[in-house]
Image 1 (cartoon, rainbow, N blue to C red):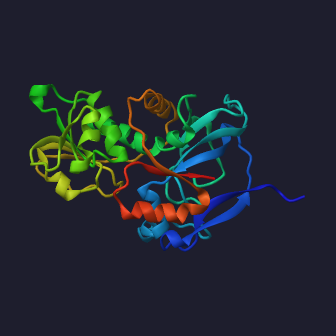
Image 2 (cartoon, rainbow, N blue to C red):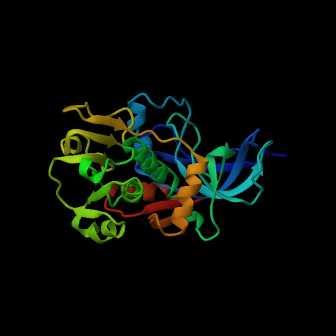
Image 3 (cartoon, rainbow, N blue to C red):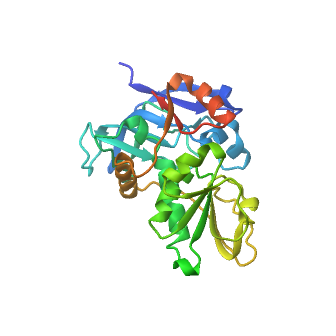
Length: 307
């Protein structure tokens, strides 16, 4: 009798969307503190395009000899639970797998992860929508940690969010307001209604002198130049923060799984407080087409893959 397998999307020799393969791998059972999730949805993020294109291999961050797994975000149902796990089979969950150097990912029919890294998805939230929350929501929450609570208004609480209409920027614009920041979103003219709908001010062109800049658009040095002397800059590219200047505090965010915090983000998404946007839902077999569409840019909302 053959052992059960499941399908997962990988790259062997990364060279863009055409190099993505769907392969069969053996099902593994969850160990202590782990769950095996039947994946219902996996979001496509820009970082996945970088993996499939070989960007992170080129930086020496990926050393998988046979294949590299794709996908960070997922949502699905618990198919099996290991010892010391109190999530019943059938529970709807979402979660995040991080790190680049791995032979598995969320673009798969199944995934074994630590139970502490997943969060329960409320009944009112579709799994396709829930799958778009973990990476971008947890990244935005971590950026807010690095910004800290805003000083009193007289002491400088003006925050510019670049890429405010994007996935990270949209969450950030909301979460930063919880910590006293007066948020202005930098985005294209077409995105004004969305950004203002988050409770933020809006601009298409920013002048220097901000108290803090959160650079969700990865403008790097040109965004750092917008920070006033002694202000705060938070970038989203780990290991690639621009060099500090003019007394500016420079951070680069790194995101890690956090089931408890994700649970709060999912609750706020279900209630409509946080923006979650699905652009299109496509079968896993069409992953290459989804990557090509994301690479063309201009998409507002996530492509979501369904195994």
